[in-house]
Length: 247
Image (tube, rainbow, N blue to C red; front, top):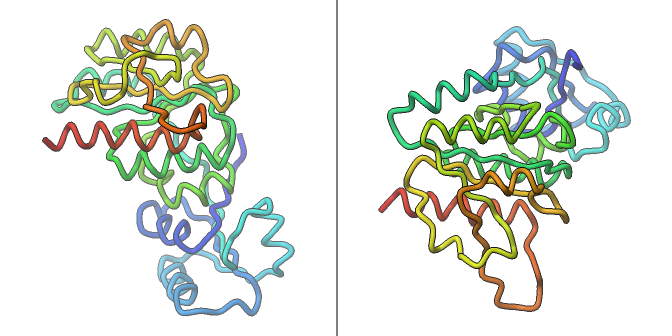
C-alpha cells in the first residue's frame, strides 16, 4: 500500500484540515498562485504545524496525476478502511436502520468519486467495494468526491457475496439496480435497514451479486437512452431512500 495519498483542490484540502488534520503530511502549493482561499488554507496548515512547500505547476500536475488541483494539494496518510467484520458488527448493533451503498466493481474514478460524494450527501452509513476491480482512491477520486472520502466509512471486501450474506443475517434488505428489473425503485421500501447495490459501468451487477439481492429495481426510462451513468443512477436510488426516510 502507498504510504501517502494526494488530495487535490481547495475544497478537498480544506476538508482534510477540518476533518482529519492528523493525517496531513504536507501541503503543496503552486508557485505564484495566490488567492484569499489558498492563503487561508496555508495559514490554517501552518498553525497546525503542517509543512507547506511551493512547487512548480508541472510538479503539482505530476503529483496530482493530471487532476485539476486549483494550485494546491495535500499529501496525507492513506485513507483508513473500516474492517469488514467490524462493519458487519456495527450494522448488526445499529439502533437506527442503516443505509449502505455497495459498488460492485465501479472502476471509473470519476464515477467512483461522484458516487462517494452523493453517498456522503445522502447520509449513507458506509460504502462497500470489492478489493479487486474497483477504482483506487486516486487524486481524481478524492477531487471528484469533494471531501467525502474524509467523512465516509469505506470498506473493501475480498468477497462481496460473503459480505452481502453476512449483513442479510443481520436483517438488512439488499436491493440491486438492474435495467431489466420489472419493478421500479419507486415501488421499493427503503426506510428499513437497506443496502443498495450498484453495478459497474457497462456490465452492471455481476451474476453472484445479483443472485444475492432480495429484490432488483430499475429506473423508469422514458426517452431513447437505455441507461444512466452509474453515479447518476446512484444519486437517484440514494435520494429515494432519503425521501422515504424523511416521511
